Image (cartoon, rainbow, N blue to C red; front, top):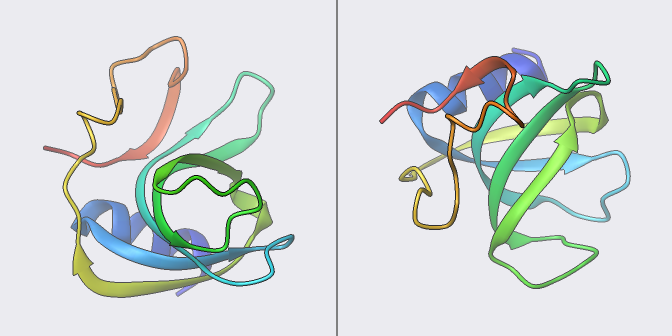
Length: 105
């Protein structure tokens, strides 16, 4: 299973993931919520990061990565809830105009 397929599965099943991007010094523990295409054409992943590497600190918080920057994905056994109280709104058509995959309630 490639990284994108792993993320699609994790979003569908609401599983936490340990991911690493090309610029990360270590893994991040994340709750992947949505993969979508930006107006500029990049495919992006929005996730709630709970632990692990963060160059900006201040966890937990929302983060975004360009999907092609993700170099490894490990699906974890733990499950997550949709982070609506933390600001996730899949109906935000200004941001999510071209959704590829999104968690479902």
